[in-house]
Image 1 (tube, helix red, strand yellow):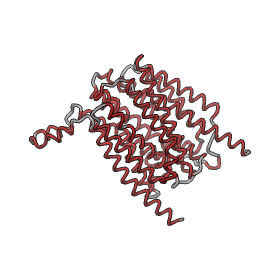
Image 2 (cartoon, helix red, strand yellow; image 1 turned 30 degrees about the horizontal axis):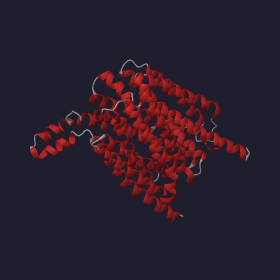
Image 3 (cartoon, one colour; image 1 turned 180 degrees about the horizontal axis):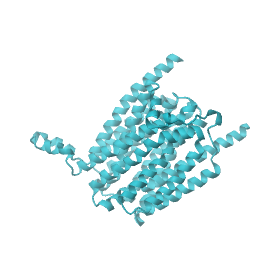
Image 4 (cartoon, one colour; image 1 turned 90 degrees about the horizontal axis):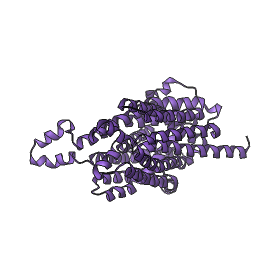
Length: 433
């Protein structure tokens, strides 16, 4: 293959990954403003919808936990292209199912199928590792993040406005977008993994526990996996309670939430698409990752405290720096495995994220439901019985922003662990050099 042909193939690959990521995330973003409201329509209660939405997110993440290492290992043997195409087709079918769901059980089935098909995002990261030099991966992952953010700019806005015509209309539109992504990939997507670099499929590596063994190979890889877990755990405060919190606190409907999420997407796209490469070139991966986690800590805490809608909106500015953390964390981890294990690494990372995704929505859904009317398993009643001195504790427990305060604390812990682990890894690399 000539140099010119290889360059054209690489450009086609990059264009497809970018466009498909945008289409898939637009489709996913479209349903964000309306899915919680659809749950409310079924159950009739904002607080009850909080924990049910948490259960749905946990179902989605649980399937990712089970399926991500399998899909990552399959892509290591059979290539990235077929995995990505099957996922796009599966997502389209799933959105049709959810659009027709007559009750919560059908919605739950739809979230399970979505968890299986969206597990191929591990393959997208592996694809980028195939075609990008190690020293340029942070920027490449930043571009993927920008594509995802671009999808979240358009998706929630479309979902919010389409939701005005009915909560099921956005699901039909999402099905069409995923179908377009499948057809586009079928026509233009080249394979990125050469036959001589493929690894035979093994259930030992493909099961969730087996995939996680890779993360134990180096102590710093395990430490970075902990940061990855905490980052995803904190992030699910948005998927679990954001829409319901905005409706309760500020009276916002799907259109207002969609516009706000679009603003978040614009900020994330700017950070990951333009700012990541510049900051990494000046500060390096480690400091950039810590800066991102610190910004997220401040932004999430401000969301929980916000006394007005304008303060809540302003909190999105420091929160946008969170976008610096993921691509640099991915870059630090991919340097520590070989080319034939990139798919397995991404599958293991997605398994870690999925473990967080199972536990976190349930956790934050419980916190939200309890802080807006529950009893925290008797804890609030116990505190109230202790006398007037315990009144501040009771007040803190019944603050609707409590879930955001907890998420901010988790992000702060991730920043501390990340700083220590990445510093130790850099010292070991300098000694070896």
